Length: 443
Ligand SMILES: [Mn+2]
Image (cartoon, rainbow, N blue to C red; front, side, top):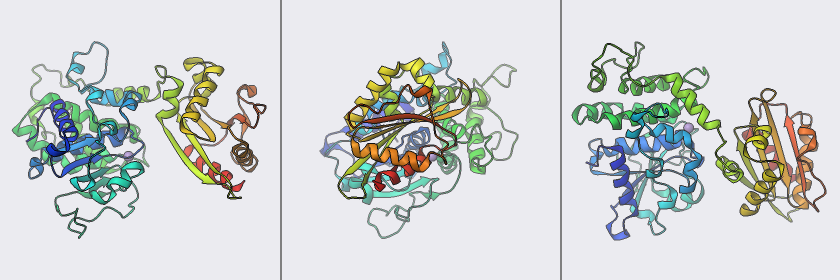
């Protein structure tokens, strides 16, 4: 059985992955979340890998939880650090010393270049088809998934004659709900209960409970969003909270489910669990939107996606890179750096990725109320034509208005073109990027 302690488990998993090829376990089982590497993906991968590694009959198999991002990007996710702390993060709170450090996680940086696909088995969480560089190397080795996205139909059913999916115990769960972590907890709750009974480790189980609750609360807006929250989200939150000693009177969790840890408070204060749902949710939300410790380079790559399109005349491939930012343009200029620093940071970001059209989409919370801004910077004439076409087509429907007296705008940099707008819709990148891509294809 792999180590019970989460810290020691991660060390063992990392050692298995990074061992010389001849000493690597075969097959090596890897659990990975989707490319956005958001809280849900990261926490779901850790939870599923941990529980599968500790659940008979899989306990002979160490599952490696892989974070689908580069090591240098771990620091861009302070909310994940808070989830790993095992308690509500507060300065001078000794309980946080029991947590697991962010850099103990396993990232794409540790994935060996010589890892042969046929020596691996993959379980996907929070997506059901590999993307990017992992897809080319490993898609055929995917054996199971737990996910809440639309089924793309590429994960083999257990027992299907794919060669890889010979393990009938492998999960194949795709169900709509707020957070994938809810499905993982629901899948593993009985194993978790048995583990807690047979080999109690309160520090580890507290961290696991926080790793489950963090994405569930974030993805369901503290279980309050009626259209996002499903029964399984409430059920899983109740299970995780019962580990923390919170007894639920609601249906879903047996109040004594994790009695191992619920009886050890020797005082009369029934709430002495160090956990408060709303406080934990507020702290995670604050960390997600606090960009004050980051540079422009960090902020522009934190939530970044790019697309490549061929122009209508078939002469040019244009690449557009979209950075989503959890604060407004005013906040950035005030908190991160002035106009010059922003433009320098964005130019460096764009050059480093070889993109023709950079887009920055912001969400403003304070400073004059909620608003969204869109900064477009075209670096070539063709990209400028696409950007202008986008504006012409969408100016009215997006209610585009110049932002900040045009202080970020420029049309004079030899072929370059740059404008910052506010737009009057709720559209995020999911809706705006396709419009920009259409414009790129139209010139
Ligand atoms: Mn998700």
